[in-house]
Image (cartoon, rainbow, N blue to C red; front, top):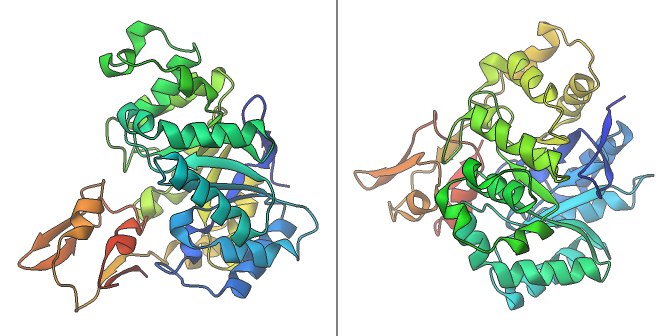
Length: 337
């Protein structure tokens, strides 16, 4: 049985294995809504009651398709790049309309690199807080590839002293950050994908945030596939962290769901069972019609894409397979395969 954790002091009980729906999106597996819905329903039957999505992913339809088939309503987390009140209201309305959910359990500011961007999106954050206070959002949070925002939340919650945080964190009134109940950061044993530090730094930051009652659910446990050769060690690292309530893992088949469910339940998996899943290493594919416009290079915060001789080139050691670059491509020339 997959263990469950309380997502923060005031949060819901969630399975430690969260189904990350990015991998069924149009920029990756491009699963039809009904097929993705069947996978989510299958995962629910395995005890996975926590599903993560985002406006960017375009997977609200998959969630809606699954909701009519499950016996237990899932905890659904989503996120948006909205920065003002009007944008936040539109994103919230879209999430409710396209999932069919009246209440969104977790609504987050998407991919925040630092406190400056969080405070720049304060009007959106305040809208989500208002919806939370009206009972239409369960918890408000942030997703991030950086350590600084997690430190800022921990500091605002009183879990860190001024001597423990960067000067930039101390320059702002962080009262609004006390309202953040969930953080969704990159966590893996080598710190792959972090913008501003190392694995141990993030571990220290999430420990502090969690000690202050903030819910923590990690992403990129396998570093966008870069830790597949160290699969067992990478999973053990994540599951040993008591300060992380759950990990979002992308899955594209019943077999992948079965393997991950067993791993998170503490069962032993043989090397033979792992071979089919681990050997399926995905990569970022750039089609021949790439025009070299540079939109993907500007969008990639991991520095994994460069324009070389008029064409996008990928550094697989840095790529997290987030496929956010694909959403920025005007020629639809990028996909995770």
